[in-house]
Amino acid sequence: MNKKKLQSEQTKKKVADAAKALFVQKGYKATSIEDIVNATGSSAGNIYYHFKSKEGLFLYLLQEWDREWESRWAEKERLYSTTKERLFGMAEQLVLENLNHPLTKASDEFYNNSEKASDVEERIAEMIAGYVSFNRKLLQEGIDSGEFEPFDADRLAIVLDSLVYGLSQHSRRLNQQEALSLYRLAMETFLYGIAKREG
Image 1 (cartoon, rainbow, N blue to C red):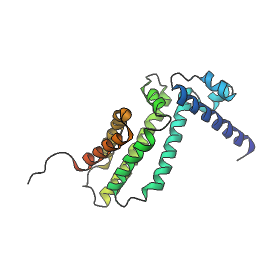
Image 2 (image 1 turned 90 degrees about the vertical axis):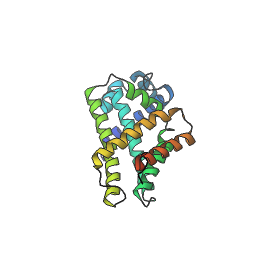
Image 3 (image 1 turned 120 degrees about the vertical axis):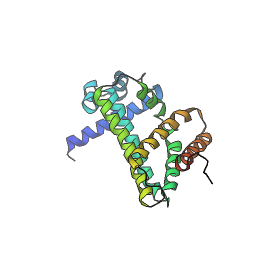
Image 4 (image 1 turned 180 degrees about the vertical axis):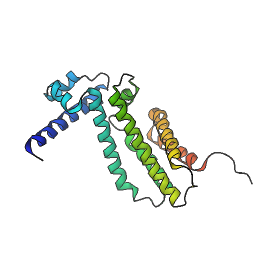
């Protein structure tokens, strides 16, 4: 990496780190570009150069969060011998890391903000597609190994993503133990259903 590119990356990281601290402290809506300028000493133009907008900057932070989550998951995933265990492990990691993540509250504000530029909406759609793809891969492994019935993994992945998203909303007011119990119940219900078996 040449010196200019290295400096640019360092500036980007400095801005992102300072902005993250502000979003955690003040929330998404209450943090302005001017706040970020004051915290970093960078110009607004420099911030726009690297991130295009406040939304773009926050999306960058969300993508960093996703990369960190996936990295930790890659370390844990091999500890599970079955896909069922991986589903329960994924649910546990979602509770332990996402519900307590410093950006959780600000991300709720961000997603509930109706005024998003079309390029931001596209990037959010790409992130969601990534979550569905993660689910599809996991479920397909279970289908291929014979653990699961040969269902359509694409459709199941969407159902699982919807389940996890709904759980994340309902778990905000729960303590960690209650949230873990709820996620476990959700995974058991997803895997085994609730209909009484005939005979």
